[in-house]
Image (cartoon, rainbow over all chains, first blue to last red; front, side, top):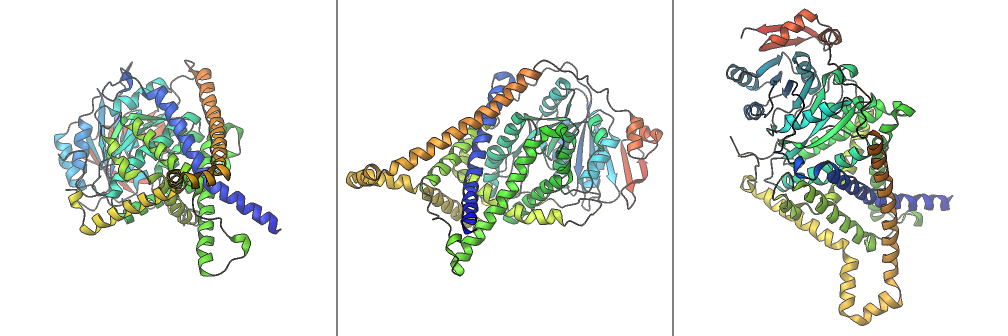
Length: 421
Length: 148
């Protein structure tokens, strides 16, 4: 019995080390293949907007909840889209600040802009659904009320819908604007080393975990088939991604669809945001996990398994941390002794892996932002911190998702949006 | 309009500035800590005798080669599986779009989905500004179309 337990522990320790280590390489391999195949070459440069066989009209939907400080700039960027036919629909989700008044005033002088007010705050999923209902067009682009869409983004997103009839959604490439603090800077690196890399790798193995909630395009007939956004989840983006893909719609990533976003620059802001992301992932797993046991859903197995293992990993890590702390407080039986924390050769390869992962992602990303290599200094340890952050958020989020009271609507306040002059 | 990238370190409080510098320093130190074996290797190299004793006589380098060898094999297998899968998909689906493009969704279907009248929906589609009232269940209660 004791032997068995000792064996279990040894497997656990190996899992703790090997999982993040090998995932880093899996992401790197996937991202490099994606880059070579779909990004390299002058025709894939942002400013070389693809020549489209036709330009069907697009509705750009902007859900706004208390975005008084940002929304005017957001709409201004949308008006400048280099695309022949589009309307802008701003959905004021029962804001308590001056968002409604600003939008009404903007609508008067902006021919393309239409404004929908929701009498009461209903949450982002409802705001998006109402935007879709009111929109005239088959193709939608949804962006946050504090984000700035690059002028070429609509054309890049539309190129996928026109090429692939089964493409239900296209996720854009969010770039962090707020970089005054360490937290801001490391998120710049995070969006390239973790988020961008994982999205590229997931595209290679077939399915993505989530579209970006900040900037994504949708085909309305796909949304109609799946019943639009679920109103009762904390992350409408993760939910709709799983719902679309479970119904055999394809999701593509378009790195040239740039969107400049504000991110939290305080620890509490970052924590709230990440906790919500983790809870949303768990909600998706609970909601769609059962349907996975079907051969027809096999293309979702990869992303589902990846997420499931990451939850196991977070809990294993937490368990080992508890044992490690416990042995400082009271003597533990021999069997629970954790092997030395002095890293040895494992530490060398893990540290090197972090450096390599970061270098690869910044090389890929330097295509979209000159001088991004400067964040290397701040970011070099981030891949490690990423795994640490996922331990904490997952451990807290799983019970939150499992024991969540069933509310009708997922509503949340955006966390802080970084330091602004 | 403000610049797209907001990089204004002076906006931080003094406490933030010190705290973040400290964090970065601690993590760099941690990172170096991970490299301890390599640092010791260099130290051993400087004192060749000790190095010879530890690495060659006691075969300390073997652990490293063994480790890296296994890692390399595993990573190669992973790469082969992933790229094989990608290649297979490219080969199978390249230039073959078996499905026709969806015609676009019919307003009547949308109206049904949201439990509203299609005539009303068409009117809303033409409106410049409107206000939607929902009931407690989240269904559309009433829509006010504002004059332009």
